[in-house]
Length: 131
Image (cartoon, rainbow, N blue to C red; front, side):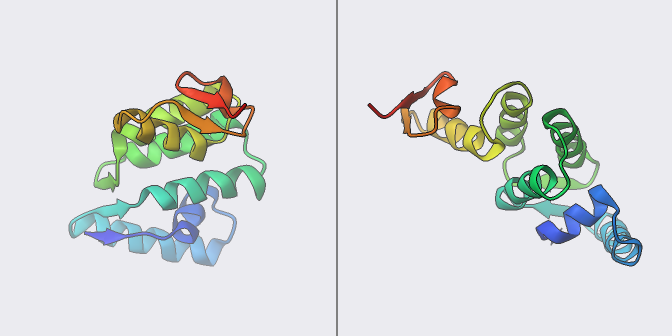
């Protein structure tokens, strides 16, 4: 199994640099054929941020792209179930994807509420605004 960094994942999803995209696709195909691709939660969070900030993708487009990536044959996400739950919350909620991933981790650790100064995140069940 081989791991991919954020910049490789972005090339695969955005396809904005033909030469790098071709190299990323070749590497991706070889990795899939020889044991698979591992993608860390940090890379998924960074990719969501890059797609939103640098490429102006909207929430549904980001969620669709990342779900497709995480569910692709031969791809192992660091915590696929948590990633998919956070993507579902991100797609419909007001907070950032990373916030929902943190909230999901707190929920699994039975460490709720998640106290925050983020008013958007505080709207989610399990999160509370610091008074």
